[in-house]
Amino acid sequence: MTTRLSVDLHGDALMASASIVPTRSLTPFRRCLVPLVLVTLACWHSSARAADSLFYAPPPPSDDSVPFSGAIELGYTALSGNTNTTTLLGKGRITWYDQAWTHTTRAEVKNVSDQENTTAEQYLVSQRERYSLGDSPNYLFGLARYEKERFSGYNNQFTTIIGYGRQLFDNDLQALSLEAGPGYRFDDYENGGRRHMLLGYLAADYALTLSDTASFIQQFSVEGADDNVTIRSYSAISVAINSSLSLRVSHDIKSNSNPPREADAHTDRTTAASVVYNF
Image 1 (cartoon, rainbow, N blue to C red):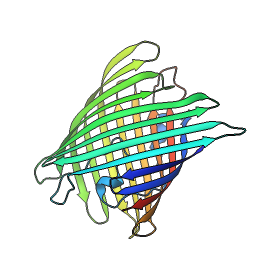
Image 2: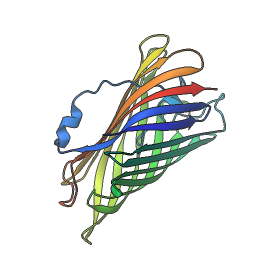
Image 3: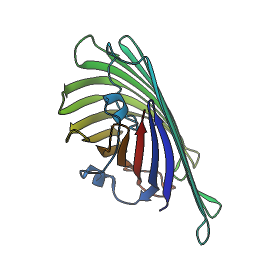
C-alpha cells in the first residue's frame, strides 16, 4: 500500500486528499455485503455529495439548479529509496440540466507502477441520462459505460442499462432513492474470447444527516448476469470544519463473483482520506 496526495475540484469545491492506492483482495464477492462505515467529505447539496459514485443517480432539475457543473480530481504519489512506486489518478465529471433532462459525463484513469513495472492500470468513460417524470418522484434513466482495466482478465467491457428510478424520500434528515432495470454487457477477454450477455441492475443511494456538520452516505449497486455478479459499494461520512474546509475519508469497492482466470483477484478496494476547500 502507498499513500496518494490528490487535488479534486468538484464544481465549486477544491479538494486536496491523501489516499490509499487501490488494492486487490481474494475475498469472495458476497463479503462486500457487510455494512461499511467510513469517513468522507462532500458538498452539502445532493448533486455534489454523490459525485464520486459510478452508479450515482443525478438529481432532478429544479428552479434553482445551476445550468452546468463539473468535477476534476488529480492525484500523484512518488516513493523512492528501498521502494520505488508511482501512483497517478485522474477523474472528471460534467453535469448539465435541460428542463426535465439531466446529463452527466464521467471519465477516470488510474495507474500504479512499482519498480518500473505497472501493477494497476484502469480507464473508464461513461454517459448517463435522467428524465424526470413531471412533478412526481419518479424518473427514467439510461447509462452507457466503457471500462478498460489491466490484470482484470478483460481487454475491455462495455455496459448499457436503461430503467426506472424513484426518490422514496428526501427531507432535511435523510434521502433514499432506488432504481432498477435491464442491461446489456459486452466482454472482450485478454485470452481472445468475447461474450455478449443480458443483465439485471439494482441500485440504492442513501444519505443521512448526522448533525449540523456531519452526514453519512451509502451507495450500492448490483449488476447480475447468468453466471456473474458485479457489486459496487461506496460508503462515507462527511464532517465540516468551517464554512470553507471539510474532512473526508471514503471507501470504494468493486467485486466480480466470477472473474476470468487471468484476473489477479475478485475484489478491488480504494480507501481515501481528504481535506476539501469549498469556494
